[in-house]
Length: 409
Ligand SMILES: [Ca+2]
Ligand SMILES: [Ca+2]
Ligand SMILES: [Ca+2]
Image (cartoon, rainbow, N blue to C red):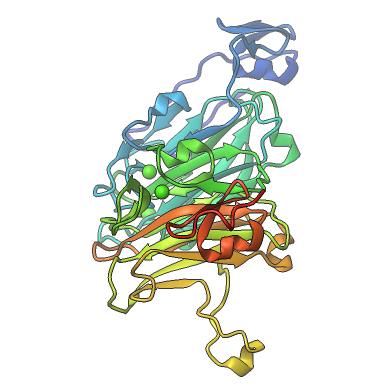
């Protein structure tokens, strides 16, 4: 047996520990024990024939790297990277803090073991390089990032996704459905850059990492009145730095997206809708009666877990072209939507055919802002509350001056 490094530089060092040659142990003792003549001798905290952890292990993870987030809770190792604010490194990736890699040497982030037996996907945002002058590296495919998984405590790794630099110059969302083999009682993931040209070059950054399962929700409902962290409610998949408060004389608190350099997103989790359901919400773009074509909020949908998005309803201005159904589509401008308005959109058969995610989107920049309130997606209220109220748990909550008659039951 020989261990050999074929190319080396004066700064290279390496070491080998815990070499074992002999009868192999089941699942390599999950990487948490020593193999002695085919039998695992487990590390402290691990037990059984394959060294399972004694404590209960998490099934999902969600890492936004924000100020309340502790990397230790999800990662066992982060090499060559650190959590930084959006204004540092190579700029904001999605919103707020990111996990940013730029050091010399190994660059890798490795999660704890997760019980992924009932989980469906891993997803995250990644950028390699970026737009800034010092952030244009990643010249070759090898300077990309690979996502791998291990079901034996990091002894062997299998490829889940290879991400080459030229496709990730701008932050991109990656959604990977876990193969059967990756759904195990002890699965860990790592992002790893095989090659780079040294410290401060070929940088990359990660954000909004999530391991989870499809929920197939039938309804989404949020009036944004109480909970401060909207994401904790489990309704939303992503909200970029939204805050709850009064916006433009709203009657109570709303979700406000303002003062963000980055694009603003409000994204639902995956939904299993039925034709005839409704998508209903109240929106106010810019709190201004002045029409501004560039102050626009679009409502999009995705049928592929958030990888690609399309406008929920395309605009149609020529009556003959759209069966007489003149529509502005799901695009909301300041001016016509610069005061609070209720929008009700029926769910079409085409939309309900696959699990769907919805997102409200507005470009970044400080002049742009909008408010969202009383989101309800689900079975319709009777006569859609005659548009004089909002649906809550399939009951109408009427606008002032319309009390009573439209209420169900
Ligand atoms: Ca973040
Ligand atoms: Ca390079
Ligand atoms: Ca509200």
